[in-house]
Image (cartoon, rainbow, N blue to C red; front, side):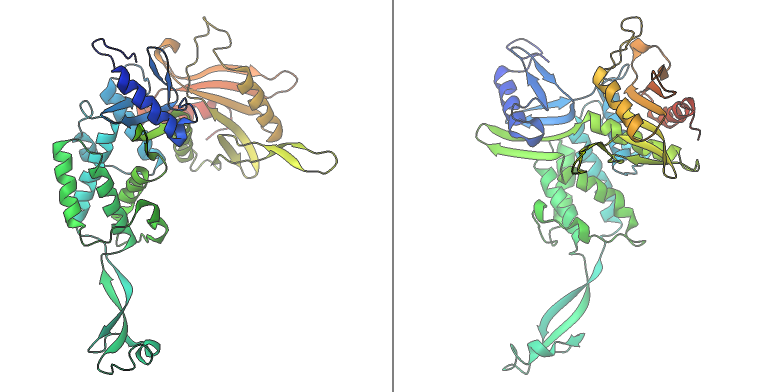
Length: 415
């Protein structure tokens, strides 16, 4: 995206503020290049997708998916985020969102606000919590220690310990913190109205700083299981990916997702579903075998972490490495743009994990033709091992499980 004084360009001062925010955020690295690259006349997104905001401006970064407009891409991104964060969102709720007009963060805020409004209408969750109060009549049990020490001179007052049904619990504190944060970010008039109503509904819940919220204290059972998806969405909007900075000229925030990681986790989650009943299981970011061992001390070094392993019992039947970059058509490049370092890495995985089938997996695009799937099959010289190259078409996400099933079948490990 170009910047400068022309029509349709970002104002140069705004571009500089965005670049400053990118440099100030942990994900951006020292020069901000983990988020955007600032050229002489151009801002270029690197691998992250989402929202980068600075004072008076915001930049929405979307991945390129052929034959989809921005609204369609936002819909696909939300679907991928839902899969990777175990969210179940009703079709009716998704249909009510303005995919064309609103950017990604506004869509996520509106999604949370609508889901929470519906949940609150059905009643806030409550639990029995222990309380200690000094009362004129006994309630629950007498706290003898407190009664005969602190209240020794006040026999008319009883030190009571009892359980009371309360809404001021960790789950509701998380919901309130999310509402208050989103009120500072939402721009849509209707969305802000809904959030203000929710803030009023949660007014009696203790306000806890985001960094002090107790996600580990939330207990989900059959009485409040319907809050599971809201809890996952709140975590997404509060933790990790959301980063804020307010240092000097770099006042802003981001809600960004490294596309490499999102693609990898999305594939791993869906492949795990595909492999159910096959006698095989999927291990994401596992393995953890070392490449080298010191000949003298025996110390092991250079630990590996393949993106995805498919295992049968203790044996690895397939190693998958996902790559969020575009393959080149064979007629342009016989190597299809596959990097030499990726080939070496996969060969190392094959040796370490004693696996004969290795798959490099990329997003499909129109220049590769209409049909996604297996794009190349290569025997590793000196062995019977094979390095395969495949693609997934993300335009119709409902077809991705079947695409994965077909790829696994082509790798001869069966499902």
